[in-house]
Amino acid sequence: MKISNQIIGTGSTSTVYVAEIENQNYAIKIYKNNYSLKLINKEIALLKQVNHPNIIKIIDSNVERKYIITELLNDMDLFDIIAQDQKPLNINSIKHFSQKLASVVQYLHSNSVAHRDIKLENILIDEDLNLKLCDFGFAEIMDTNFVQKCQGTLEYLAPEIQKIGLISANELANTDVFSLGVCIFILAFAHPPYKVNTKSCPYWNLLYSGQWQTYWQIIDRRNKYDQSFYSLMQGMLEFNPQNRLKIEEVLHHPFLIGDWKEEFETDIRVRLKIK
Ligand SMILES: Nc1ncnc2c1ncn2[C@@H]1O[C@H](COP(=O)(O)OP(=O)(O)O)[C@@H](O)[C@H]1O
Ligand SMILES: [Mg+2]
Image 1 (cartoon, rainbow, N blue to C red):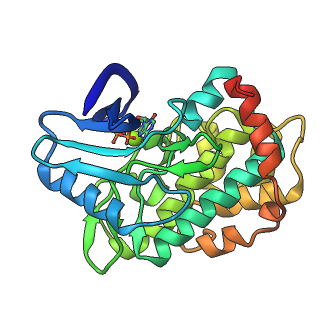
Image 2 (spheres, rainbow, N blue to C red):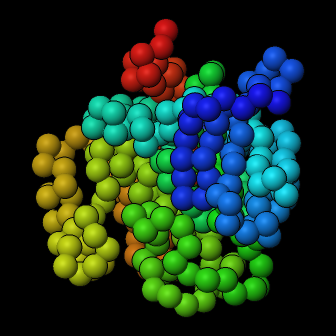
């Protein structure tokens, strides 16, 4: 195996490089030195357990040497793509993204897996422009055990897990829906739904108190989106987890109906400057 010294990605737990094995290129995720072997083992076990066209495929791993090898994807993740132009994706691209990600999350939840770190940085595309969810470092089996709240990335964290404490793993499905809602929101506006997650933030306050009409007036002055988009966002970014949409409801939501792959591909090709 030959590892190039060019970094193709960094995250909170690792650095990712290109690795060449028998003339074929892969990605190698090398964990930080002090990263726990137990957590590496857990991520590997979960990656081996899942099998879905929109989930990254694991090829090989070495726990003692703290790496995993996966299929090589584009080094621009969805966050990089949005950050580069600071411009929302086209509406039909957002529909395609929502369909694919809702289908992955539904697959995970129906297999009792919560991802716990759904964010644009962890969503990549392959050379055929298929979306791939990666980074199962925080993923958890949903059972009756209690797990720590506050796991994941603050900007995407559901309100019910923002305070230190324990939550039943069964309830993590609701938190993934919130995080996916934040992803879809960022693709539509090129900024997050609120600036900070405290009452000092007027956006946060409006969501907290469910004042959606006022919220959309402030956020979306040009009123670009149709009613089905707003209703999807309101259902996913609902602060009360009991009233939040379940992933099956997201998957069957009117906003997602249709086939938008071509529009998505065209949009992404332009942004990545590929033919
Ligand atoms: N297979 C891959 N191909 C291309 N880039 C990747 C691949 N896996 C990860 N990356 C990039 O590396 C970054 C960090 O990887 P990730 O698995 O999210 O690790 P961390 O747990 O440290 O966040 C990702 O955000 C992505 O940009
Ligand atoms: Mg990551």
